[in-house]
Image (cartoon, rainbow over all chains, first blue to last red):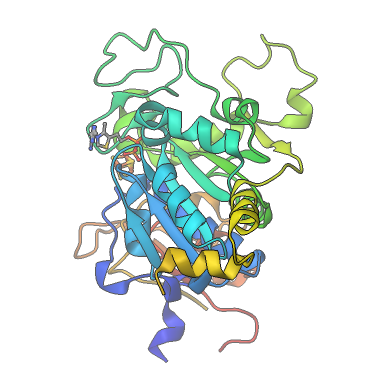
Amino acid sequence: MEKTRESRFMKYLRKDRLPNIFCAGCGNGIVMNTFFNGMEMAEINMEDVVLVSGIGCSSRIPGYVKCDSLHTTHGRPISFATGVKLANPDRNVVVFSGDGDAAAIGGNHLIHGARRNIDLTVICINNSIYGMTGGQISPTSPQGSYGSTAPYGSLENPFDLSKLVTAAGASYVARWTTAHPLQLSSAIKKGLKNKGFSFIEVVSQCPTYFGRKNRMKSPLDMMQWMKEESVVKRKADRMDVAELEGKIIVGDFQKKDAPEFSERICQLSSEKCPLEKPSAVRSAYRGD
Amino acid sequence: MITIDEKLCKGCNICTEFCPHHVYEESENLNKKGVHIPVPENEERCTKCQVCSLLCPDQAIKVDEEDEN
Ligand SMILES: Cc1ncc(C[n+]2csc(CCOP(=O)(O)OP(=O)(O)O)c2C)c(N)n1
Ligand code: SF4
């Protein structure tokens, strides 16, 4: 009886670690739910999933999930995930990363993962700031936004992550926000189903640092802002630069068929392997 | 039926703001943890769309499905 009074997602969580450490209203918990929802929509079981993350508030997500997971070093989750995927090509390998983790210290791993089109699903929680370390400016902080390292407003040009990863060669790229939980769930589903590098950018709220420093006092203000300022890609494609100032473009950025890296490695290994059996190659990896 | 787990809720009230049918109201009083818990005051309006449980960052909301009692 007790069990039925719990969230529908509780079955995936390590209950002994709850409540999670995220601040009240932080977007990280919402992204976690949409991942579970997208996974159910894709009809994938948690036993077939491996979650990999780097360092940051967003990177703590895998620690709450009952599954095989790796909490790695700052900026490197895509490198670890590449190894996991090549050794276990049958698993769905999913990376949770922040904008600092994925685009600053981990920027190279991100573009090269996309270039190889390796079958990973990277969920990048873009809150435009370094949350964990106290609100420093990140490579996605909008020009003019405030952070603890930009008391007069950021001077830098931010990365448009979805465009960057599309240009680098990923086969599925989408951007949504935490104020679009249904669309986000279905983008995650599409990412999981895509055989290749999938990048889902989630514009999210860090009310504690980004919100407080940028005149959005509550998580509700931040989510209203994301909802109001979002423009779907199809419409945005017909708007000019001035009209798009300050807007968040959401939707699918890329969806294409392209050769996938782990499959090609496996194929090459079996071609070059004297026994000519991929299973022999796999068992060599496992050492049995 | 809607259940809020007070051990998990941090009082962000995203559910109160984003429920499409305005089912919740923020309680005026603080609970033991110092949190304004959302209260499903208008539960009769609930269509079980599950948007609140998807948006709850703390997995504190349970909305029963049609076939549950
Ligand atoms: C090699 C290394 N450099 C720097 C740090 C300090 N550090 C920890 S988390 C972080 C940035 C976190 O920002 P982001 O990845 O955007 O995640 P968020 O906390 O916002 O979710 C930094 C710089 C570190 N842990 N390791
Ligand atoms: S500091 Fe920001 S990103 Fe980190 S848990 Fe708090 S609100 Fe979330």
